[in-house]
Image (cartoon, rainbow, N blue to C red; front, side):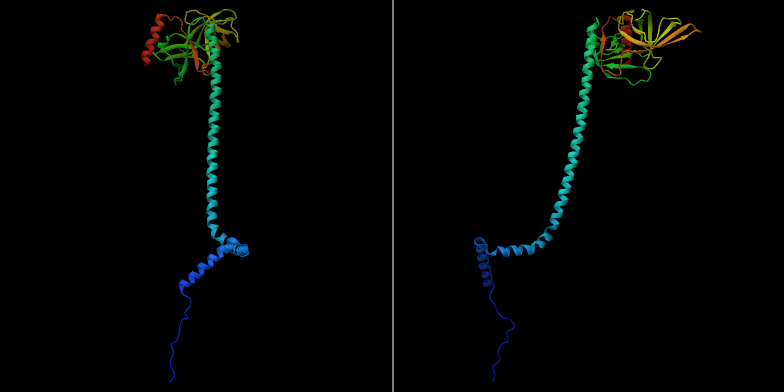
Length: 294
């Protein structure tokens, strides 16, 4: 009778432990061989050539992200550098403008000091605080007042000559009406022939007028007007204006002249207030105006 045998479905091989041991042993052998002899160098190079495209493909997303990041960083750095350069240009322009302004003010102050040495009256140097916005008057407000010895009625001068006259004061500020303001009238005389006249402001913008003249008055364009000293407020010999034109009316027998002031209050910030003796009436009147303004 034939003995039946068991059917084998799977062929048994080495155990997992044995396979792991063999792999570890093979790895150690390869490490030693690769470290001591260049036997595996050709195989390493061949393998690296084969897997290089796959490496590049795997690293492509990372490289793309780095390129975008580098481009973004470069654009941000360029923008910051551009802004910094623009800031520096603005600062340099401001410094240059400020330096030019200081140089101009320094030159004007030197000329003003020479004027202060030329006049015999004591003076106070003042600086413009602001110009009141009024279309019907021409005034300037200075940074010194009665505490510095300034009184209403005192004349204001610059390097060109008469600028105006103090009309209001407070302890620490003073307000001057300019030569072209309708509140100011100055006794003058013609330098060429000594003819005494009165110059008024307010009729023509940035001009002064000499009114109430005889039609045959000895006055021609180009004549220089200076202060006559009459009245005591304005010292004699200070420049006032230059005659532009003389209008003669034969029918009425009168004439008037228009003149351009020598002073330029719109160009400067510093002026001199001459501390002349002010009559009591004008001083009180000016102080009353100042109290009403306050």
